Structure formats: structure tokens, C-alpha cells
Image 1 (cartoon, one colour):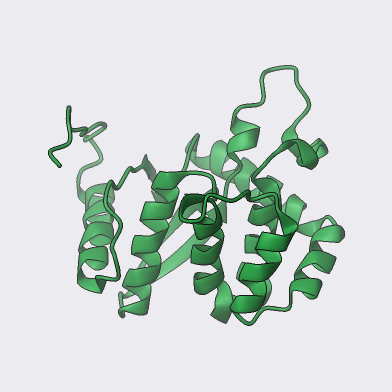
Image 2 (image 1 turned 180 degrees about the vertical axis):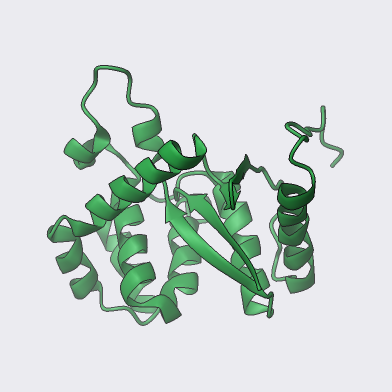
Length: 199
């Protein structure tokens, strides 16, 4: 089994693409042990001398959904993949706000998760602490600065997949396996970016 971690923030379209590949691949039988790591783009953009976003979560448009995702990841692991994609869809498919509690509750309920229990857990402050700790560890241990970042062993790489898997599990597995292979076998490859996209 191949083990690795991947960061996410529901606001990022490239995180959405990568995490769809992960979920579709896993649902299609991929032999991966994936650790889903919350990461706050709001905290990344806090200027030096400003108060951390953890101290003022209401100022961040993505933290409520991120907290809901973490609660489901840790307490309803069997429902996590579906909820995860549903929370990405709020922003990227439906054009709605990730700070809208009604929309988050809708996704939770539609996927068999007790929305009241999730928001009760968020109210304790523990999910925000988990996000802070996992975000900080990613920064401190691997110099992570964005999403999605794939981490395997001592290596970490930020990746932009331009295509969604569209339900194609074989495509999803190939996409993710290619990334993991490069992490393992090409540590000297620092950038590989097309100058233009042929579409």
C-alpha cells in the first residue's frame, strides 16, 4: 500500500481537482493510504504582525467548511469522501459560499452525517485547534505553502492537475500514481510547468 498525505482548503480549484482524483481513485480500488490534511489559505495570507486567523476565524471565508470537513474526517470516516466532494462542490460547482452554514448542513445531511453533532463539535473549538496544529506541522515539517501539496516521507510537492477525473477511476489512479512516482524517483525535478495549455 502506498502512503502519502495531501493538503486541502475547499476554496482552491486545484485542490478540488486533486481531491476528486483521490476520491475517485480510492472508490475505484486504488491501493493508497491517504492522510487528508487541512490547510488554511487564510492563514498563509496573514501578513507579518497581523493576528493569526485562528484567533479570528470569522474573518476567513473557508474555515467553517474546513472545520466541518475535519469533524467528518475524524468522526464519520465512512462518509468523509462524499462529504469532502460535496463541500468542494458548494464553491466550485454551485457558486455558493463556504461560510454558509445552511449549505454545509445540507451537504452533511445529504450524506448521512448528523449536522447538529458536527456543529456542536465545531462550537467546542477543537476542530479549529486540529486545523491549526495540522497546518502548522505541514509548514514546519515540510515548508508547505499551498494546496494541494502531496507529502511522502521527507518530500513535499505542490501540484496542479488541470483536468477533473469525471468518474474515471483508471484516469484518477494514473494521475495520482504519477505524482507519487515523481515524489519517489525524481527529487531533483523542482518544476515542470507547461508554458501553455492546448485545449
